Length: 173
Image 1 (tube, one colour):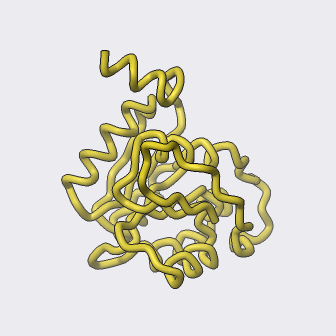
Image 2 (cartoon, rainbow, N blue to C red; image 1 turned 90 degrees about the vertical axis):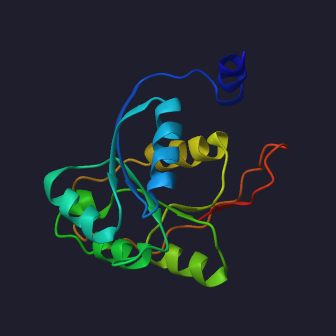
C-alpha cells in the first residue's frame, strides 16, 4: 500500500542510467539519500564524505549530476564547487550540481549561484522535491565542446509550487 502511494506521488519508477555523486559528511544522511535515490530508480550512486574525496573520484569517473552538502569538514561545498567549475575537463566542469543544506541564507544562495549550482535544496526534503531537482538538473544537456569550463552565474528560475504536504521551501537558481 505504501509503495503504491509512493509511486502515485512521484510517478512511475524506472531504472535510470545516470551516475550520481553524493557528497555528504554525515554517514546517516548519505545512507538516507542513497535510499531515496534508489527509490527514484538511480542505481549508480557513488558517495564521498567531503570535497577532497569527491575530487579523487572525479579523476576516475564521470558523473551526470552531483548532490553536494554545503557545510562539510576538510573541504566544504563552496570550495569543492569552485574547484569543480575550474576543472580542466570541460565535461566534468559542467556537471550539474545541486547544493543541499540544513541552513540556507541569502549569502549561501548567492554564492551557490555564482559558483554555478543548478539549485539549492533545504534539508530535510521529500522524495518529490529531490526528484524535481534531479529531473531539472539532468534535463540540461552538458555541452561536450565547451571552450571555457567556467560557466556564467546560473540563471534564476521561477520557483515551482511545492506540494501542499511539503512544508519546506524549494529554491531554484
